[in-house]
Length: 369
Image 1 (cartoon, rainbow, N blue to C red):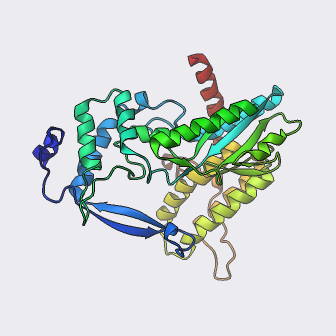
Image 2: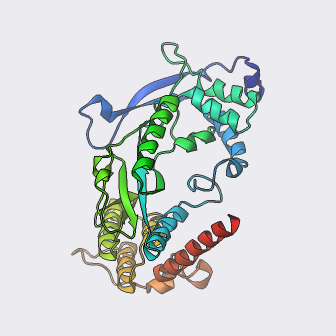
Image 3: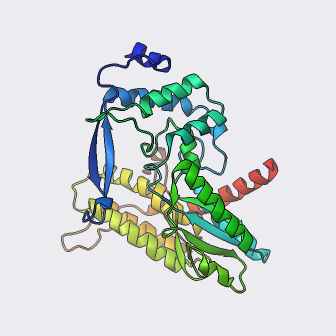
């Protein structure tokens, strides 16, 4: 297998079955009444996956030098929380300086399905990848065989690590822009040209615009643009976190508590060991709670309510449904394992750490520029 894979760049034959795939449909959430609610997926051989993973692991060593610092997700050594903290700190800075800006969140329609391969390979060549490497990528992307032989010229696997340029068309892309009518008009022309070259289309129906900074009156021409323009008090979600021009801890608390309760309910009726529950809580702390604390500074009482909610899941409930009395206070659970804790977090200390981390990222960015 090693010899055959190394010969891919010389256009030699792969192992039998290497390039064969089975296309099937996977239903999306929210009903399957129409064909658009089904997503096609190609099931590839294990050898194909191993070979692609080897290339992906090698690329991870150089991806940080290829992908700009604005892309924080899915790059080793970077954290998507930095973008959330930057969002919050930028809003406060613009508000203090009495400046107006626009926060535009774009949604690309089924971004990995229509993207053209020639656009991908041109991007890879621009980044400096050799023709030999491009031939290897083409051999495992374009020449996959189905029941009827077809050469694939569009679509990629979502999150395919072997194609770093796909990060340039990643979904959930956000821009901080000046609020200028001519600039927005030129931006629309730019996206139209991008769509014609790459094959990806902007889903304006799901795209959102949020005024940013210090506001007096919202320009009336914003209402004529194809995307939805939100008011000062309205909000949307960026990277899974509720955002608005005027964020209130009460609104964010409702969002966090409801999502956390819904996620914990999945495991409530399962007979889980104590260590398994700790692993689940660590995951929730690293995902839902970390995003929210990075965006909004909660008061101490809100953090204590979150800790009680997590503790109730950890210790379980009685037969009547009431929460059991905690066998240890949360501060004890938040200690390292070596100090008789379980390695969870003190939410108050973690929130302070996020604030200082965000300030450090901004100071580092200013010094580099």
